[in-house]
Image (cartoon, rainbow, N blue to C red; front, side, top):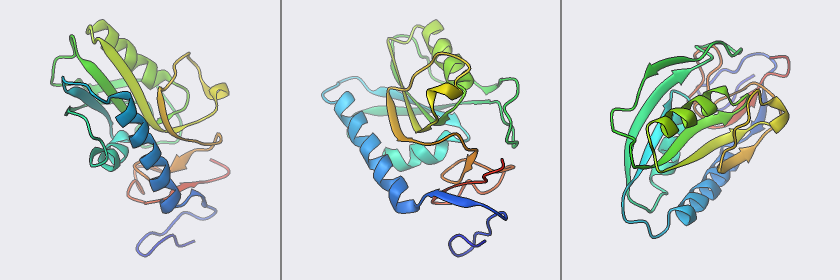
Length: 184
């Protein structure tokens, strides 16, 4: 199956959201973030969860109209597979989180383990406010822990998805639309 020019999709892959739909959802998330941080004076520290949150953050940056600084954190449970494993912290933020208003950007809220660990880390570092924004959210019934995103671009069914920054076995993050394999 061919997606757009240059992308060969795995056999059986189905499109969940096309590129235009993804952009509409991202625009709505950006508007919600602009409303949430309207009128602030001190820069928000945007922490991007690598690698999946990078694409979403890149799509958001030019649409955000409040002062912000950018940093990242690298933690993972998937490591180029389709099944979550033990959480691995690879890189902590380079900037101090103490006394900061934080905007955490991640690709998907699924089981919630990564998000909960990051929110707890920010709390322990004495951040004054933590807002979790995710591009995608699976049903709450998928959660292993109790964590919620304050901003969700799009809610999706319980499928393993790829494209829009998310990989399938380390590849296809650069697809502009969201795909899934029904059996994955």
